[in-house]
Length: 597
Image (cartoon, rainbow, N blue to C red; front, side):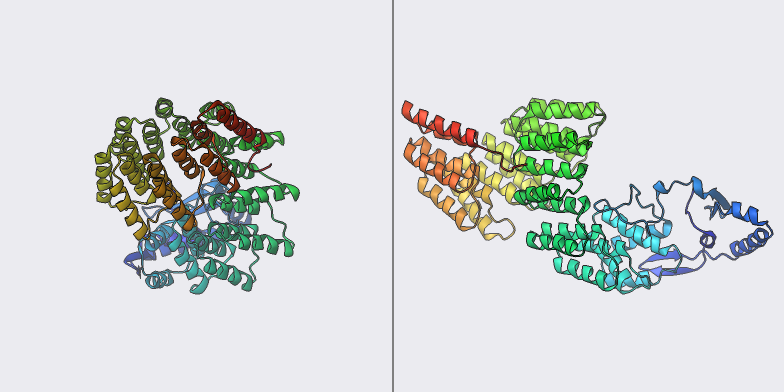
């Protein structure tokens, strides 16, 4: 078994009496006198070979095994795809590895990785890095460590290592180093530092790559700075660099994560107008964009367009389409796509199974979700925490709180620690059944686990109090949320208040809650409007319901089936029923997809 793949110079580093101190670690110099003598004798023998013999021996690599014995291996038979240096081979955006090559860390690199992961004092880490004995492969070790840290999503250690290269070491940083720093600062939303690194890159006369621009774009999108993201595209075009699919995909990815769906569609249209060659990633991103905008048929149209031009979908594409239908509870469509994925030769992974489970959960078929869960286990695909969470949610939506509780306990029994979302879903399940006592126990358990309840969990507790008619407790919890900085109310919070007050007949309190949401700058969604209309529908105030419906449409909120049902509930005679039916029909007849393709 190879312990390191090094040149003859590295053969000296095997068993060492000399050490260099690095933050508690010991770096072996491997300068044993016996090994030096053997190496000198070996060199003398090598010089006696003919030119052709020496040429053939160049194919062989040499290393010292753990017993101190010199051994050789054929360099050409060692696959580059199993690791090796990244220097000079570029860095593929968005992956953290190059052409499918994960960094294989040498013993030296492993020690450096341990140092920067455990260290907290940057000055001490830099001092330790300064003391590393210089070798021709140290650069590769440092870069491999940085890329491994990126795979682990450890942004602070990446910054520590790359800034040491930039400001302290004798190395001349290359584009990989600059790109890693821009990426790390972008992930931390420290835009000014990401920009300063980009300026340093230009001042060092290092040519930015398309990956550099892609990373800048994503950083701006993550921070919501869309106008500055557009500036990156403009700068590329001014410098005569036409944005390619890599750059546009990074832009789309950032817009998707920032929930800027309309802008994402605009960028996609621009790609087609500029005849930028789209790829599988582009179509997968757009399927996700339309799916999250609750436009599954638009997602399907993109999928069909993709196949029509000969672009082959991958498993991520199929999973995105299953998710698009799952969000709307269209389990039959989701199952069709799932089957098509298998027919195309893709073996479903945990993400694909989870997407199909979500479809049955949203459709109100918890047994279907449970069957998919069992199928996943039967097929040898191990469920993850999200799988259990989806199953808890499926039972909770159906009002089966005991089954939801059983899945939650099973999650803990298999060795997975419940997350905040796990607790929140269990809270929602018990809230729907009106079991406030169990909800309070779950909250206490959450605190005991060291987890601080977020807004979603507190919203579930608000709903539990509201459903049980404990309005005083609900209002006390809401006041606490307003005073807490990290759990401030969101539109979901006000939706609970509007719904609870409306069902209880407290229209004044309901209107006050609606006004408070608007005053906070929160946009009322379809749930807010439907709950508000429903309160007046219960009192058969038909005219007021129609007025609110018009306000809803004017506000740019598109009604759903629940809104139509509430409007029909407000009717008290045949004429009103016919009028509402005509409105609903015209609404669907004139309805266009939210975004045109």
